[in-house]
Amino acid sequence: MREQKPSIFQLGAVEGTDGEVVVSGWGLGMCAARCACHRDPADGQLRIREDRTAGTLGLHSFEPARCGCCRPWTTEELRAVLRDVAAVAALEARERTAG
Image 1 (cartoon, one colour):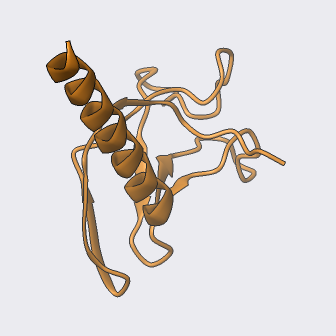
Image 2 (tube, one colour):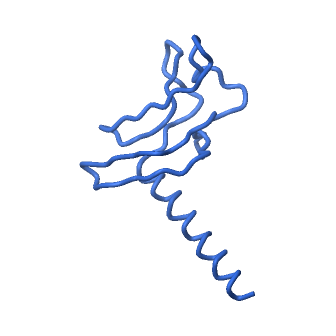
C-alpha cells in the first residue's frame, strides 16, 4: 500500500550518517488538495515538522488528534528522491550530447 506524502516543490540536502543526519533546504507542499489539518489556523500557512530523532520531515498538524492524511518523508526516502533526480538529469544530459 502506498502512503500519501507531502508534495515536494524544492529539493534540499540530506547530509550525514544515520546517527547524525541533517535535512535542509526542502520545500514541502500540501499532501492533498483539501487537507486542512496542516494549515495554521492563525495565518493559513503550512508548517514543516522535522523529527531528528525519527529521521523524518513532514508537515505539522494543527488538529488535536494525530494527523491521518499523510506520513512524513524519511531521510532514506529523501535520499532516494535525490538519487532519482540525479539519474534523470544524467539521462537528459546523455540525450542532449547524443543529439
